[in-house]
Image (cartoon, rainbow over all chains, first blue to last red):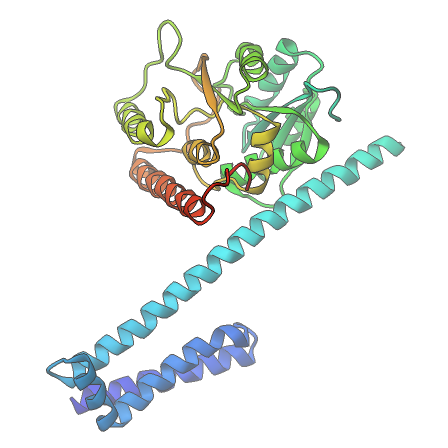
Length: 117
Length: 250
């Protein structure tokens, strides 16, 4: 149990470090780093404060804490993956509309050039 | 290229790496419907498609990056709508569609008042032989679409399609990005638009090979099935929220 909590804490700190480093290097935008930072902090708090983990375990109704920790972690990351799927879908729609608009404008520009010459 | 008159027609040809076929496709269209502009929408081909199409007398709409079939066709619809064309007929760039069938699709569009006319490979005298998997897929979608569309569609996967200005207005705003043919039918039907089929001839591809492989077939079925039901639910929800109003636009 202690080892599992320590590993979770270590992974949470690692995730925090990677996300902060990526934000500093502008590899990800600040608005998209918030979810990852919140998830890492939540996992760190749960793994370092057994009463909080026990409260979550009782709330969910699970028999042991490691399972509760696993379930919370999996749920948090599933929600994040879904959120990013929504964002990617919007970006794809915007990207397609933009590419079509660029193509149509290029067509009009070319037509004007041909008309002038 | 400009729309002239109440029956202005534009032929659009989506193309990706079709240098072997595109010149012949454009020339055959010019031969069958002289004076009708042909717009080749190039989905970022890496070969000589654009030059061959231009040499054959087509106008080119070059996409800045690869969008896939739906995005490519919709770009053509958007330009046609902006330029004021009343009718648009889509012909594939691989040479499978026979340009001699374009006049019958155009005639049906003008005379029937239908918003979409599909060139069907199964309405001809001999029909058209399909592979086992594709044949089963088409039969499956006929069954699925029958209650949704309220009538049978013999060739729901046909890419040889003509639309009028009303359908063009809808498609220029909303068009499926992947595997668009079946979903597009549902999009129009949910707006109470009408469609019809006319016989058409499908020939073997002149060059290249189909992008739908056996492995992709299952993904194709699941994707299209999901898209169909999403469209059904979406428009049923809109109609429930607006009782007494007809849904005739996007």
